[in-house]
Every structure is written in structure tokens, then in C-alpha cells.
Length: 136
Image 1 (cartoon, rainbow, N blue to C red):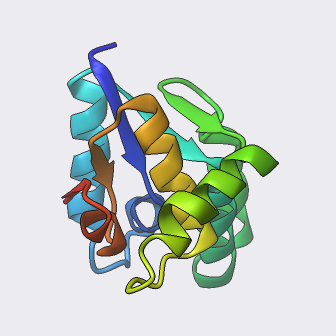
Image 2 (tube, helix red, strand yellow; image 1 turned 180 degrees about the vertical axis):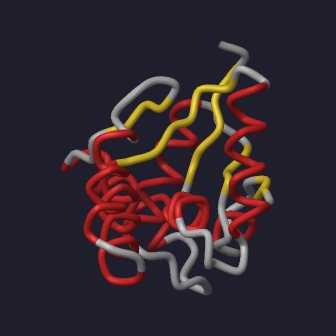
């Protein structure tokens, strides 16, 4: 693998929902990461967010298919832990008191920092505010 790229819930959702406004750029971003041999990294918290979006805005089958597919290579799902969540709280939520980072976002940032990931496939402006490169 050439490296890793983080994938956030909004990109998973938009890529799997042909009616989503950002469907095409999100599909292209995911394909681009795969074609450039980047491992896609996400967290179980992001998976839960994307599943909920698909379940409520698309249909149950799409949500179920996503849960099965996201566990397969080239995607790695990092499980949140108490220690990871504490670092997310200390390093991101408390430190950036001018931002409204969710716990899922802050855990994502901690995972990215731990793994040296600089780029996130995301529609969430918080990733750029946290200092990461946001694509698309």
C-alpha cells in the first residue's frame, strides 16, 4: 500500500447514495484512493454515523451492505477505546475550545495523528479546522 487516507461518514454516505448532492465527487475520491493504492482508514464511530445516515435517508439494505463492505480490504476500521477517547477529549475537544468538534470527529483526528494520516475524504469542515487536508 502507498499510504493511508481517512474516510469520514459523509463521504461514505454520499458515495453510496446516488441522490446525494456530493455523490459523484465522493465516489471519485474513494476510487482515487483505491487506485493510488491508499488504504482507507475509518473508525467504528464513523461507521456507526454512516450506517445511521444510510438507514434513515436511503434504505435498510444499503445500510446493511455498507456494514458488510466496510470491513473488507482496502479499508481498516479502527475501534475506539477509552484511552483513544480520552486523548480525543484532551487533545482536540478541550484544546480547541473555539470549535464544536464531535467525539466522533475528535477520535478521527486522534487516529489520524497516531497513524500520521494527513488527508481525509470528508465533507466536514472540522477536518480542515483541525489541520488536515480535506478532500473532495
